[in-house]
Image: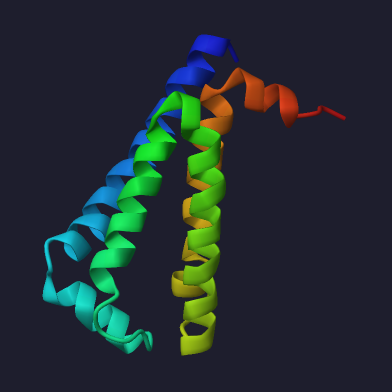
Length: 129
């Protein structure tokens, strides 16, 4: 696969990840939508943390889409996604649809970044056996 094709696919995967995060996670929290508060309450979070978590998510998405800080954004986002996974485990959520959803998001995020960033591909090469 050519470098140009890999880069385009990487930006497409990254774009899907960013659109999902902005549309399904950040916007409901920052807009004060009731569904965000209800979800946090169901997961055992005290009220009042929705806005702060939404702002953190927005900051991490912005770090991720800026090429100079994309790896930092991805690393910090994995911390956030790990916390989300731990929360789902503690809440007794279903494995494949809820607990592992953070892993799915992380794979999209890192896969997109790996495909669009030659330095990251050099650091973590795909080896054929």
